[in-house]
Amino acid sequence: MRSNRKNHHMEFEISYTSKEITPWGGMLLLRQMLNKIGFKEVIASCPDLPTPKSNRGYSPITIIESFLVSIWSGANRFMHTEVTRHDKALSNIFNWKQAPGQDTFKRFFSKFTQAKNQRVSDYFYSWMLDNVKFDNYTLDCDSSVVTRYGEQQGAKKGYNPQKHGRASHHPIMAFVSDVKMVANFWLRSGNTSSSEGFVAFLEDTFQKLKNKTIGLLRLDSGFYSKEILDYIEQKEKSINYIVAVKFYEPIQRMIAGINTWLPIDEGIEISEAQYQSPLWEKPRRVVFVRQRIKIRPKAAGRTLKLFKDEEFYRQYRYSAYVTNITLPAVEIWRLYRSRGDAENRIKELKYDFGFDSFNLQDFYGTEAALTMAMLAYNLMSLFRHCILNSKTQHTLSTLRYKVFAIGAYFEKNKGRYILKMALHQKRREWFTGLWKNTNQINLPLIFSNA
Image (cartoon, rainbow, N blue to C red):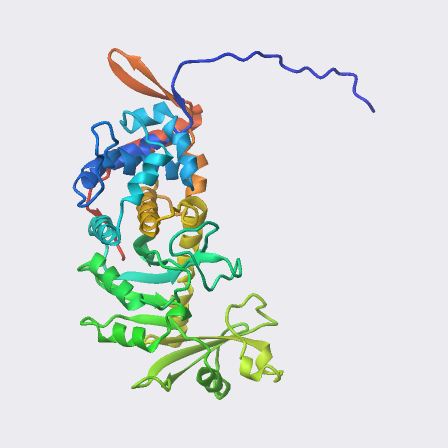
């Protein structure tokens, strides 16, 4: 039945205001956190940062701060930083005379060399990790493939599962799992294998972690090599490790010969043995897991390719882990499984922090920009831990609309500037609570691992 009611459309006109309004009023919380931890002073004390040649140039403090704020506001490529540049109210929140544009960022990062990157990244990672008092870390290392479409230095054809034959970079990262922070990052050419240069990367990571105790090191099968295992075991302080095993032929034949499997859950069985690779000087403990595909169709692992014609072996997916830890085999497997969180960190870095899209022609310029993206990530982790105090690990894209996207403008009252926040009455108490948290943050931060 057709309704006789008329549709009433509200008629309106457009008008304009000269008020400087920002959609990012919630960034005030981050400004306050940075102030409380003395971030401007931290940048000012960093050795080797490029400085402007003229008095009218932007200071490194403004360039780095505004680059981080641009990322937090949604920029994941240099062109997007123009949005922050034109937001005068946001500049006022962070006390910048004016925010730089994309060309300033590009010129700044293009001045970095390999040596300068090393010193600057050492400084910022060490500062962050020195101020997080948490020992017995779980350290996860992983590599990623970042597809490139231009003529960037170091973009080479190599292993690229998403875009076969495309040039790429092959960066490597170390994550502190317990506090969800990046401990180290190197950009590498696309034709580099996962394990290539990894011992040097680990050495550099341990240097950044300084006197911290690494309680556990977890590596995927890309790092399964004699050189890496020997290095870990020969360290002055032997490190507990679990490394996923590559399914070379001797390993597959050993698995096929195992007769005793212990059921630990429906469709999951576990075993272990001392195994000596033809390349090793000594045997090592290896834990084996097999999962029945019919019961667990999404189970991770490999089938035994050597026995693909045999029906029995096609029923399972297998995993194997070499370790020097004496815990029960099932605990080794459980400890390794939570390493998947490192892959979630990489996904967030790509989607929310421009990890795969901030790039310059110059290799070391790209590495410098991405090092700052890692700093943006670590500071956001600090914000989650200390300001939000939330058990839920919200991604940055979620935090943007939950916390940071609040319309605001400045108003002057009796000589004081007040940031007027467009917040519904019910949300004001919540925001005031976060504001109080930002005023209570102090370095160093004590994390309990109890």
